Length: 95
Image (cartoon, rainbow, N blue to C red; front, side, top):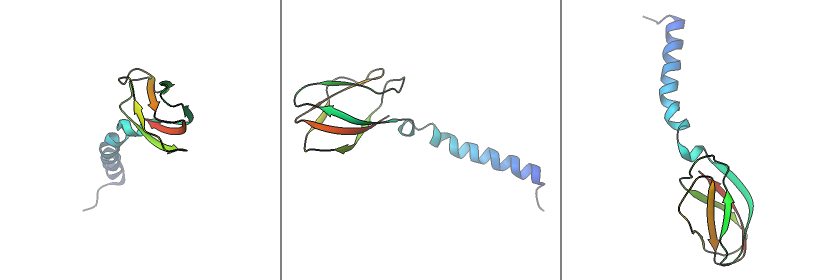
């Protein structure tokens, strides 16, 4: 027996929603890509993440020199504070 078209469409929409909602709610996908951040050796730099919430983490996507980059302050609302062991320009994905 085949379901009526309306019923099968409603069922498909419900299934899609239940499967897509957890993916769309993932904070990793709700991030911001920030390019051209210049860090100078041993000088903390505050970066506005524009997330309008406390960030959960970040990935360094690109850097133009060998350097150790680390967070110097706890995550807080909108500001990420990084420091570097050498002068470097980086790009970040902040989430």
